[in-house]
Length: 475
Image (cartoon, rainbow, N blue to C red; front, side, top):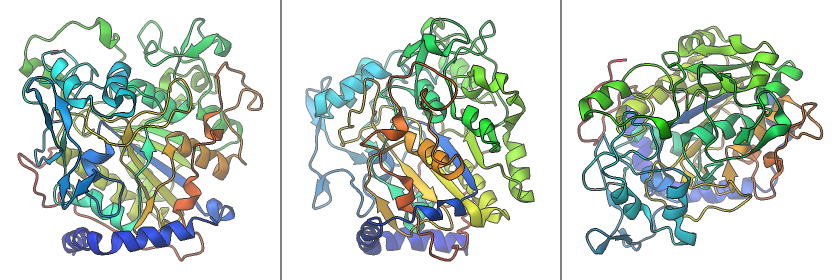
């Protein structure tokens, strides 16, 4: 039955998405801001390295790949071939992606031309590294950054978009890679701190020092858990198969000795330190909150028991992350397993799930990111809201970033308090209050709190897809 529902939802998307979007836009004029308190559990699922166009570029009604008569009208220069390449359907389960550091973001966007993706992938195609999560690393071969997946490749994701809310203007908070993106997810900033445990010694940085064994808490500025603890709001940071130990920074790692060695390291279980940033914030230890950093087995137990904390963040390990060369199918199965657990939970009727991807992974996107300050925003990523109060088939066109998650949590649980050094009781030297950015939309627009709670949409963990090279994950 779930498989039939999945196939039906994708098939119906083209016929009703535009109507649902139009109705949703009208509903968004007067959002029910008081109803936000019906949400007593926020679950943030943070996946890896996909642009909006690479997953939803052909989703009906969305701001997807520019086309005329189903043929892309955009063509990105290919310096190596002395021609240009159009976006094309790529059904490969395993992809290479492209480099995705801050310099690559600048080159990819190219002053608003959005035409640097192939050149950057070709430039870095021979940069083989020990750690495949290094943003400078891509595997050799023809660049696949112009490829996009169809609804039949990722049917569960398209079903969630069809049955709930798809956000087609969600931008990475920072124009850089995974590490600073994760810092923004929990603190609305990425910084370098000159003096350990001194929040006023920090300055904006797209590539700050990471956690090491010698310096396990280098992030001295304030993160959201400080406010959650202050207001006695429960939270947990859940790690897929636990955590990998802190290591050296990417830039100082030695090159690998072969593809087999690199892939073996990539498949080791546990969340790498570049994604597992929360233990690196000094305020987490100061507030004696380190016990809230747990494995995902604790999340599934809490969901089953109906004891989810108010705020949950879920971080994948490499294999489940969708970060190339991880399989798309494995990531979709991992996410579906989490969402099914929430939908089966006694907490479902009071939960909002925020699903997104941390950066664009070098993949093509055609929308120019807005500039809100020196570090952001970055290139557009897929994002969805899944909740019993989420509007159905609604495409949210607001300008959003991960800062909107902080804003929603603060408005729901903290009486609108912000990570603002003038008011939060823990001064740091951040240059702005990102949650108050004029450009930032409000996630309350994605809900209809006057509707009865909607029933769960349980989907198959391993749906039938058109992905090439898929295999059932072992975990």
